[in-house]
Amino acid sequence: GEDVEQSLFLSVREGDSSVINCTYTDSSSTYLYWYKQEPGAGLQLLTYIFSNMDMKQDQRLTVLLNKKDKHLSLRIADTQTGDSAIYFCAESHNTDKLIFGTGTRLQVFP
Amino acid sequence: GAGVSQTPSNKVTEKGKYVELRCDPISGHTALYWYRQSLGQGPEFLIYFQGTGAADDSGLPNDRFFAVRPEGSVSTLKIQRTERGDSAVYLCASSSSPGAGYTFGSGTRLTVV
Image (cartoon, chains in turn red, green):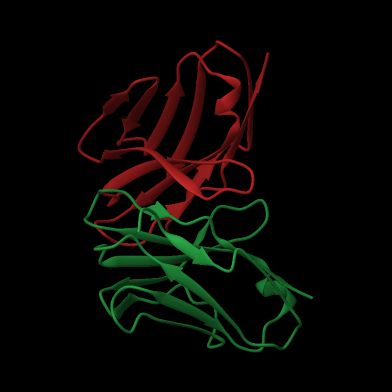
């Protein structure tokens, strides 16, 4: 079945880059997403990438997709304390449901 | 509206009771999704509406769970004979087109005591 896996925790120093990794199993995934969830809040869409792309950059965010290895990463440049949150990787096939990973908790320390 | 609105934000109910959770999507969004997020987990898909009809209800855990969207906008998730294991945050999302991403509401935190 479909499965999305992420490491549970990442700790980085303010100003450094953060890299959050994700692997998925569904080779027919059409879109891959990164969502951010702050405590007590809903999910905020950060960025997404089509499966026929291998990279997408949006300000401090860079998404890399290795379709052969089914590996997705999110790089946050110049990480700030406000970036502390849980980051979810998700995949979908066309307009179908999202399959989420368990989330990576990013902690940024000064 | 400007965003996806979910009411109530918190609901405490006794085991065995019936609850209704409401989702008001972004105006004009034809696709509406319900997810359930348990503590420490990622959201799990429950049901997807395209317009008024349920296009995919494969995530509903059992027949105690039901959802409607009679006019293609507001949706209600209904849970009968609630159990303590139903305690979770129930998230609603809407979308305008494929690949556009989904806009999530802040969720309803359901606690069954």
